[in-house]
Amino acid sequence: MSAAHPDPPLVVTCAAIWRQGRLLLARRADSGLWELPGGKQRPGEDLAACLAREISEELGVAVQVLERVGLVRERANGRRLDLHCFACRLLEGHPTALEHLELRWVLPSEMAGLDLCPADRQLAGLLAGQAPAA
Image (cartoon, rainbow, N blue to C red):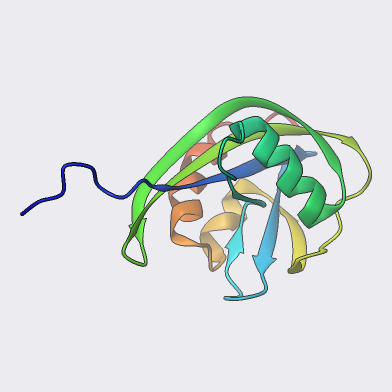
């Protein structure tokens, strides 16, 4: 018998933060893979509020969440994943790796050479076409 209501997806947000034509990436402590910083949405939490909270917790900075620039839907570890990527502007502070192994500002062309999380790899090409002028 097939389920009438499949399990809801894991909803995750991530930030496209640009500086001088470079995008901020973070290396995960659990897997060592590179990703756009962000995290899981809490029940009842707005996507923009989720992302602002996650960036504050992970990087110690405040951001202004702007428009959504991408959405990746995939299956990961047997569960559906919806990754919402938003352009963000740093408001104050300097990003610090509070929960990651390291942070790196990369040119869009450099992303292909990094070991990215699968969903972030899907976003890489899209973001390369959206890089602001340096």
